[in-house]
Image (cartoon, rainbow over all chains, first blue to last red; front, side, top):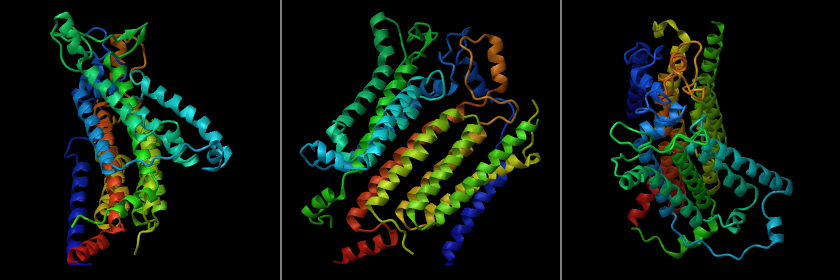
Length: 277
Length: 86
Length: 139
C-alpha cells in the first residue's frame, strides 16, 4: 500500500479505537444508566399531568409531545430542510413534461406485469392507505405520527409504477404539478397551526406565543385538548395530519421524477451541445 | 432475572448480524446484491430498535430502510451501470 | 438505584463496540471505494449506526423496562410515579427522529445528482470522471 493510504487508515482506526475505549471506561458517563436523567424526568412527568395544567402537553405519548410541543421549533426547521431538498430535486430536473395522448384500455392491459399482479396491487394499495392514515392520525395516543405515516404511504406509488406502468399514475392525475400542490397544502397547514394561537390572541385581546399548545402562566390561550371525550392533544393532531400530507406528497413527487424514461432526457441532452466549458 | 439475559443475547446477535452484513455490503461488486444486503442490515437494526424500547423509530425504519432507500437505489442502478469495475 | 459499572457486563460492552465497528466499516466504504452508488449505500449505513448508538445511550438497564408511553387514560399521581420507575428516556428518540428525516433529505438529493453526473460523463467511477474532465479541458 502507499504511505498516504496506510497513514490515513491508521489514523481512522486509531481514533475510533480510542473513542470506543473511552466510552467503555465510562469517560462520558455510565452507559447505559439505570436511573432517569433530570430532563427526561421533567418531560415524562409533565406530559399528561392533570394536576399542573401549566406545563402539560395533553398527550400520553412523551416522544410526540417532545417532537411537536416541547421542541417544536426543531421539527419546524427539519421540515423546511426536507422541503428545500425536494425543491432542489425538482429544480435539477426542470424539463418540459412530454405531452401524450391518453392510452386506451387495450394498451393499458398490455403494459406492466400480469393481471394477477395488477389486481393484488390494487387491493394492497387500499390497505396501505388505511394503515398509513391510522398510523399518522393516532400519533398522539400510540407510537406513530406524521412522518411515519407519510413514509408508509410513499410505498404506494412505487408499487403502482412497478406493477402497472408509470403512465397509469399520470392518467389518474397524479402528476408533478398536483403533487407540488398537495405538498404546499400540507406545509400551509403546518404554518397555519403555528400561527393560530397568535390569531386567537389578537381576536380575544390576550397575549400568546407562536406554536403554543396549551395554557401557559402568562398566555391564556389553549387549543382544545379533548373533542367528544377523546384526547386530541391540542395542536399535535393538526400538525400530524399536515405532516402526513406533506411527506406523502413529497415522496410521490420524487418517484414521479425518477421514473421518467431515459429516452426523453437523451433527446433533450442531444438537442443542446455541451456548452459548459 | 433470566429474562434479561435473553434480551441481551438477542441484542448482541442482531448487532453481530448487522456487522457481518455491513462488511458484505462494502466488499460486494454487484450493486443489486449490495442493496439487498444493506436492507437486511436495516431489518436487523429495526429489531434492535424494538428491543431498546423505541417503537416510533421501529415504525420509521420499516418504511424507510426496507421500502424507500432500496427502491430509489434500484431506480438509480437501472438507469446507470450495475457492476462496479475492478 | 445503584448503577451497574460497564466493565462488569460483557454483553453491554460488546453491543456498543460492535455498533462503533459498524460505523468504522461504513466510513471505510465511503472514503475508499470508487463507485458513487457504493458511497451512497455506505452513507445510509453510517447514519443507521449513529442512530443506534444514540438510542443505546437513552436505554435504561433495569428489569422490567417499558417504552415512554402512558397506558392509562387519566393518570393519577401514583400512576405517574410507577411509570417513571420503568420508563426509558424519551429525549434521544425524539432527536433520532429528526436525524432520520434530515439524512433522508440529503440521500435523496445525492441520488438525483448522481443521475445527472452519469448523463453528462457517461460513467460513475470517480477516477474515470477525473480523467474525462482532464481530457475535455485539454480540448
